[in-house]
Length: 608
Image (cartoon, rainbow, N blue to C red; front, side, top):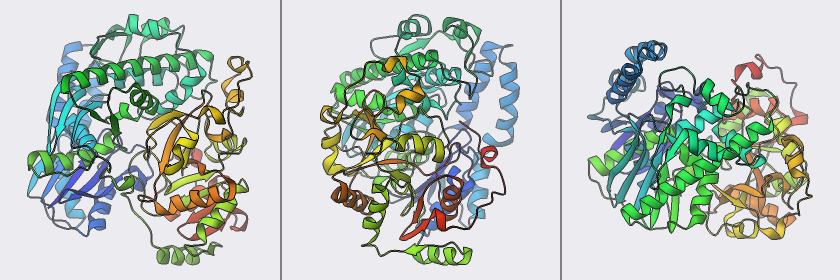
């Protein structure tokens, strides 16, 4: 049975195909259109999923929320705050009347364009049911509590569910406008970053600050209860009836107007980031404790945009509230497409599910397109791009030697990752031992703010040699501290340094991935899910004694992660990446013909 899941019209639209309960393909639309967080109907992702499976007949299509119920919330909210919400109402309603209420005709038209037949059934799980299904059904657990936290779905902003075998039911919810996702986004916006895009920057900025505003947030903005539920004091926010996240009262509470985008970062923004991160962790931990008490489950599954807060995830795991925690790697709205399809298969159709307690069903999140060596070879020859072709056996040795010589390598290989993290197949990698690599990658390759940390990829079997983590972290969704034996002692003047100076000071023997608080967002690499990337790490360990690399997504600032060899070559030539590896083909920057951009990429991609 073929079930297509779709999410779109808010941000991170995506499609996923589930065949007899198995996740066959999944991809975000942004990877094809090159529009970051593309919200449009995922025509390209749908075409890819159908082509990957060789499917033209669909038994069902599942859309990740209920559009009419969401529209009802918008109407009811606008009426509740009238006349204040008139501008927001006039902005939203035409789009809804033109597109968002007509999802069924859009689905049928898209399938016809792809040469597929109309489905037998269309399903509309609720938004947070889709999130919960994306968390529980691919997890390794036969039974689990399920927490979902995001901005807002139809009405719910957070839910608690219970998963047992093939059944999943929501037992509690927190409703709009009281939202942890929107609270975090309000601070994201106030600190000068884009909402639904820059939240991870705020998380990376937090270690530079002190949580001096925590009491003010809990006193003035958030009424937090012991079970983790809360109410926002809406007098400080503008997102209900206005066109911005915060207002003048919010600004007065925190000492002045919001930071303008791209303006100099001050200590206030660092302290605000630390404070809202502290509050977020308190809320997540309180919700988790309540989930354990309410459900009695020993394991927890997480999804929703807030579940991408890997610092909070790491603290939740270390708190020991649950025996184990599994987080959907595409935890945001893109993963809703996957969850919607699985919700139909297991919950609606009552199909059985097997879980062994160890292995998840995500195939390492490698669910996107891949490109055969024969096709890549023909493309390179046609374009006249100088290259060398390596054997599969020679590839790890060659790339490991280049990395050890402090070269930066772009990797485009195997199936593209599903979700916001590059996990070795669409990655830029370098030597984590290099004290200069963090600065080089930020300023000359990613063209992004210098305060931002980078993540490590580490051999799964060696994870404990580098980090205070006792289990795999395959999806880069857990933050853990570097083990004390690898740390360098602080010099005592850290708090007097600006973020740009402070971030470049070595703090361990793997300085390129050690953040200012000795933490790192860890990806463990398994030979079972990515044998090629594992082989590279193994070879690098053989040469250097370190089974660890710096790993960042293959893109420049504001650009979606690359998908195709063409995307990879373009990004390679626009940046100061030294070598590009596409499958078994290696391209050296110095050997390439002079690159001329038709467009200025800094204008092409909107900064986040």
